[in-house]
Image 1 (cartoon, rainbow, N blue to C red):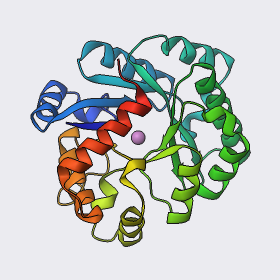
Image 2: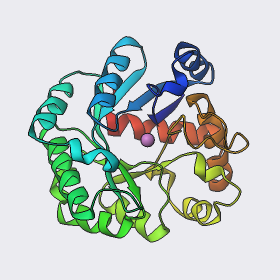
Image 3: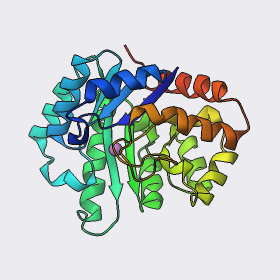
Image 4: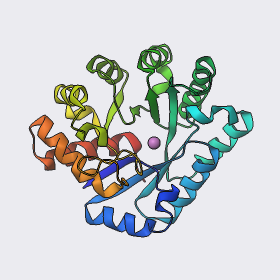
Amino acid sequence: MLIDTHAHLTDKAFADNVQEIIAKAKECTVTKIITSGFDYDSSVEAVEFAKKYQGIYASVGVYPENIYEYNDEIEHKLEALTKNSKVVAIGEIGLQYTEDMPEREKQKEIFLRQLSLASRCKLPVVIHCRDAYGDMIELLKKNKSLLSQGGTLHCFGGSYEIAKEAIKLGLYISVGGVSTFKNAINLKETLTKLPLENMILETDCPYLAPHPYRGKLNMPSYIPTIAENLAKLKDVSVEEVAKVTSYNAEKLFKFK
Ligand code: NI
């Protein structure tokens, strides 16, 4: 059994054949999938979607690009969404310091508000982080009490040092398709050194398909490809990767 802890099944790329995509995932032993929101509307869609399909769960939140929509009303509405038993996390939320993103102080403010929301709702957090790992770790260290339900650094791409800090904060390192790329030398080395006990798997589909599907449409049925690559890096069997990462995901997200 494998778990895809981060996907975007409501993406229009899957609009025509989502049932087929889910069936294919199940054939590939991917029995649970978390479909993630990234703003309020996509969070509503994720919850509706999770309600409809067995084995599909949702996370709700507003990620860096969309934080200007965040206000008290949206926060209350997100909190209301978490009342559904298939909502297993707040996310994706986080920091992204690339060009054309909202100003950093505003990003930190909204990220912090959603960390508080997660703490209040007793849910783990799914963290999106790009080019902001230093500030991310600093902010999380200062607000460690808000991480009582744990969380994950989704699509992890940071250094070994950052990963160690994140693990100390009780976060899981989420391993996705990038870890299979030929040029992901540093990430591969980092994963080799980290314990499997701190890892979970994800696709982030429809984006970031693993090698040899790089550049094509990503889907949850590629989780075995990511697991096989990780098994090679860790020099363990793919069964071991499946067992440990699924156990970790169950522990973190407490699927009902
Ligand atoms: Ni994502």
